[in-house]
Length: 293
Image (cartoon, rainbow, N blue to C red; front, side):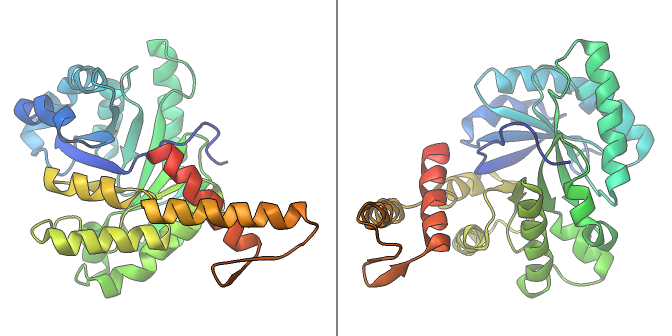
């Protein structure tokens, strides 16, 4: 199954540890399209219970400022179920599921959410899913995972965990192929690819980060996840078409429509032939301009 509801237009999603009140309080000021309340890597084991207990209040606070709220749960099943029971509420848009290894893994999470939504009186299907592929097993099953649930809106490659399992450094050379597979699988399933080619942990060189985000958009990614506020503005700027791209797309489509009106099946614009794939890309630029501009 593929996503059956409108997909979000997130350019940027910022991780915020759910148990740190000062970060939660400032989350809405960071400029991100979505906030990910983290219950996993940024929360020490002794703080897990208090972090999950803080989610409903934190989600209400952030959602009250018009932002979408995601919650990244833990992977061990006993923790995951507790996280879901505490986190699912009207203000939480999406559950980010780490270390997804199979379609069955995601389907089981979706089944638990079905039950919790009924118990809490939420509209069935309210809670969406974002799958983190963080191992070679999950990557091998990525097409099945991408179609595992109608709740699923997107895929993301967890570069650090993936690289550790493979035994490689999280370099652009090693991560390029896996990230392409994420894009291809998401597009085949009609859901969204999020991410970029590189380590999410490296935010010290913002010029290099901008280059990675610019490359990510060229590769087909629609948005990315960040761990530091300094990354948000770059993601917001680079995951939208530029003024020049929008003008070019409008001119190209006008030339194409004129050719069709004149009974011509082909047209040229600025020295290049216009065919169906070129038209499709131009329409996607304008769609992204409207959705994300």
